[in-house]
Length: 461
Image (cartoon, rainbow, N blue to C red; front, side, top):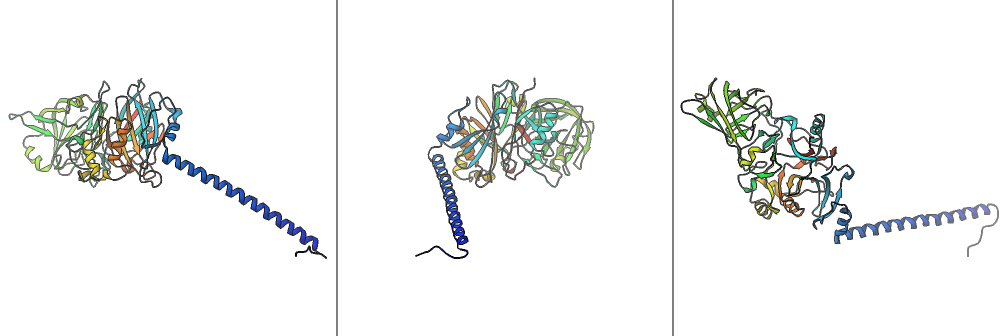
């Protein structure tokens, strides 16, 4: 039996014991509250997870309650509106959470919008070199051009031993100028010669959207007794055995950067080149070593060494002739803005047939494009009868977004109502800039310099 202490100091002992009991009760009270809060948080997390897993229609209804709302596919967990207060008329910016584990950023433009237009921009205003979308948009704003959204576009090389510090190897038409067009090659980044390779997007003066494999029909007609004709394989591309005859314009850069090519400087012709072009010319210089300076008022015709020897006796200084270009399909001869990718994803609202086989075989049906069978960050352009879509898919971020395969993209875009779509350069280059900043999360954690930009901008008044 416990007894109360007596004698000297007993009062102090009683006070200490009382204080100890009080502290014990307070600690128990704090611990009970902490446990209660933790349990409530845990219950809330479990409930939210259950709702997400069982009935994500609930979340879709929350995310799509404005006048632009529409029924979203079951493969969308949630759609977020980004910077809604800054949307001009006819423009929207969304982030879709794909059930497969990817964040998809989409900038949309109403095709009927009278205040908006599609446009493209070449990095540093020339083929050679790269530039971030942010730097390019700052440059455009200084020219009183107002970009609203832009996504990295064409494929290219990032640099090589020839001194090319990056250059696109896809089609590029800007303000009607034929800046670049390659020869078809079945290689990653290029457009293979098949229906799957119909991968250049263009806009005609009357606003028609085109998606085709565009071919260059270029010829140099020499004024001599035999009327020799030299076919031109590419414009502002690498001159080699794949493309033995290449035409270089001032848009390429300062020099051709070739080695040992036979080169002929042509002047007194009209610039710029276009999709339907005819002009007289005169040869002013012949160079057998390559790497010619490209004049601001002319072009350089480069011929790969083995083929070039055959033309040395035919083309000399003061040789005259006629340069002709006619893009096919014929509608492309009038295209004002055009940009190339590498593979078609959606055709007439359905996944591209060759992409279906590619997805089922996990890339074995197109070995050169096997990268597309793995999940990576991606970029793309799509459209339907009402809208244009610029798209960036984040990837290589465990726990946030792992990216998509090409087949994943085609199927998802089709579910979103996109009627036609092509694949752009992806990986660490995949970037969507919108309303003044980069809105997605590039794989390297920073904005990479790219070759050209497909963009939505305010229309000039």
